[in-house]
Image: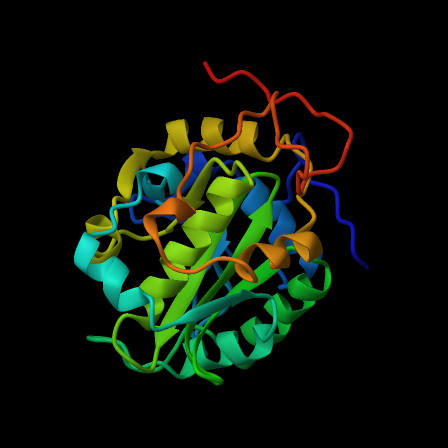
Length: 264
């Protein structure tokens, strides 16, 4: 199974605006690709631990990082050049490392065995992707997330050496800018993401942006792997973004054109 339609008009979930003030929208369900695509297409994501049932969330404020607006200090550029980056070469390794990463003020992990299995299935459907960061031949950092149309939903990241997760985020933004993506949904604001330029957006605005972004076709993620083969960490990774109506000749997108829905 490699193709799943985005159910834009019908959903098995309540409308996100019906969520509790803390963002909790629904309890139960399944972690099948169909459920997950339905959730992400409507601004909903799963977040729970091994002691609770499956919980589905749609917070009132959504932190978004627009690839063209990422903040990368000059000093960080120099430090990132020690790394190399790849796309979708070790998804299982990245999500497993994210599950085992120790985080401040957090006991255990929300990336359970069932979640790992679910997102590996999404990866097989070409809807979940990983960025790997290497120091020599050692995997030292990375991130993974879900892609629908031109929206990317960041799930988790990890680092084994300083700045490796930052390298993953910068590499992802550079790639998504090349693919003309609209935004990265960070799901929850953290000081780390705020430093890189993430901004909180009201849920209603986020849902309109999301509806517009997923109206586009999926890019060719297999061809997109070539982006990192000839790239090194340098500010030139962030050229002007190609417009939807004037894409480069060697576009990563299918030849058919799909017009986005107008945001009002």
